[in-house]
Length: 194
Image (cartoon, rainbow, N blue to C red):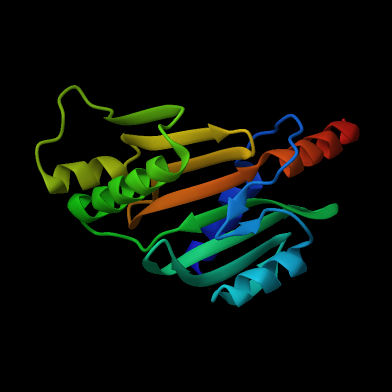
């Protein structure tokens, strides 16, 4: 299993929030986040994605998304209930701040055109003085001193765009979709376990 796959599985397993009920599902690439994992994967394959396998309730796919080639897409379900509720996209890794932030701001602009202004935005470096060059900015990303994310809260769910890193070797943009209806079902199931 690749590092991208493991990272995606970890994000999908531990990330996310729960919501109240809504009447419509959030949509990813024209397909509502609903149904069983196998049904959803089949729909994504029809959209041109390649299925790389499934582990622990998460299917990993590869393909083009939003004009970016070679994206890794994770489709997640609640293990006890085969119901899709979350999708995360890892965009190709970048070695320079200009390329990494360029991807982030390009995607942020497209999301803003579709969903309006983000509900929340944090775009800063944790340091006493702002980094002055590309190398210093990438250093800040790799050592978890860069907080860049935009969050859209819609009546169908949440969409979050962020700059992420894996250790000090890989930096990339992550986009996640969390369906409101099915997240509520996941939360209800989790509460029943308590």
